[in-house]
Length: 133
Image (tube, rainbow, N blue to C red; front, top):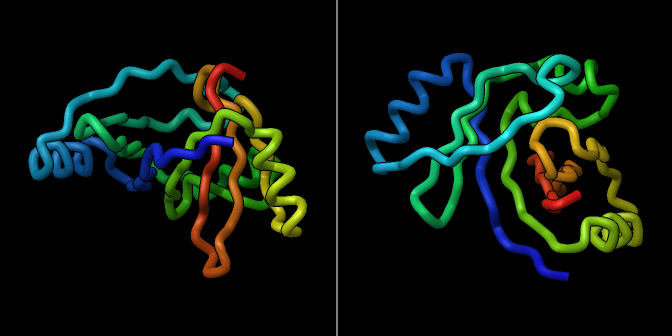
């Protein structure tokens, strides 16, 4: 199973302000992604930016997303960091073997990204996703 660091999600009340800040300080450029389920789940504004190696997803905070999606974990309240895998089912088995609960969002926000979210021991939210699902 391959795991690589993919992005940091930053939640804000003002995406434009935060995006302009990060772009100007770190010379970030845009990344173009297709989104899905903007009517049913998360319809907030997101700016996807990168330095060429690491991405930042600057998203409008949604404190009610977990309730709307019927999941215990809300990745768009305080933000999260993300790893990409080539074996999401194997990674879920790894969490289950360690009795680490996770929220299985499936393909819900990003076209072709199967996403799960879980907490580290200190309550930080971690995403792991696989593309092409």
